[in-house]
Image (cartoon, rainbow, N blue to C red; front, side, top):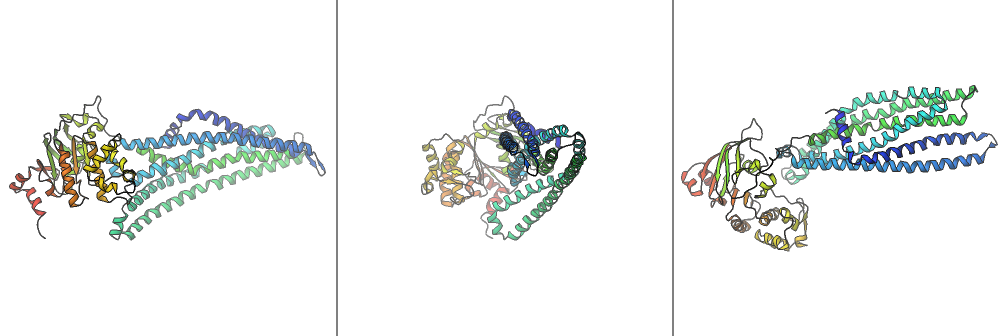
Length: 581
């Protein structure tokens, strides 16, 4: 991605506040022109100091008052310009962050699964803020810089054309110096942004799994891993800053040459005493203009560091925005019918084309059946569930619910047909009540309490400091892992969906509570089609149909007794749980 598209895309986010550009430009022009008029007032005031014991104090006081008024008004318009540019920038960044988050809801799940969460968080926070800093710098510096350069040229030409041309021809050298150095530091800033995302991913992973790190005495290796990435970031960052730091001193050196040349030529003009020669006050004015003329070049080159970092960050953000989205839903979508029937026809799927997983899977589920899915780790059990929920789309074949291909349905309506409880719990920061009502925000208090009682949450919730108003979070220590899982189960109890998916839903619950939950599930599943993934085969003996999977294929199918009598893979798997070692 080249710079031009990046700049163009960044500027496209300023369109909603484009009307503010007019007052910003006007304020910048007025502020700069007043600041440029100040040296003229200073020069005229100096000319009232004619010599020793020969000072026109009334004239000096008058121009001091003029200068004070000019400075105050200039500062006021400068504030207006800053207000407009800040509003444009923060609105643009807010919209960019909104689009980035919305994009994450539309990308396929495999992008989320294959990208480090810390890297995604880094793009949402650090990279967006870097773009914001770069935009603020560029807006304010370029607006005032362009007006200052044009204004000083006009004022200098009015005072002395020859000296003005000397200033104008020497100053652009600083731009050539800056352009050369920019090429050196561009790649380093891009590399720096990439390593920063890698470091964020490492930190998120190690901090989130701190218990595992300590349990396996991984602290030293974790520290070494962090220091290796941090060391690369340090080296890259130092080089990027070193190259960019060369810009300002080099341009200042050129600009100081301009200042000296102005002073020398001005002094010669005064000493010569020729007709049209400048006065001492005009020299002071001219020197001030020479300094103000070169200042924008210093400021513009000074923000190159911010701009380079902003461009690198923008590329990372736009890379996400350019990701391929989920397959769009067909229009008009088929209505989501929940008659309890589900058919899997010749389905094949793999996360990577070169690694086969599911091949030619077929299944015909009748309404109200309990389907248990068992098999060794990696056989495709969870993948099959992901396909049912359309977290991934099948590569070949079709999955039909109520006779309709799920690819013809709205994802939202399809997923509303299933209630899903996973082995991994997910609790967001909020009250117990809000967590239970996650899938049904308009639920009444009685419905929430009833769902909590069905999942055996009510008793421990009442013992919490604020009951249902207690604030909990995934990382907080208020709830045990088992209690979090009970809350996840209560969400399904509340929504009461027509079909269920239970993936080791009671794995973190003690045996006594599990028996109660199994009883509650039995009531919940009555008359509903249910898919149950279980590693403990004793928990799925009552299933109507048990699917035995191995290497992505359904190799056996039947009820518990039939499969045991068959003496095949399931029988060996079941009996292995009771073998003494």
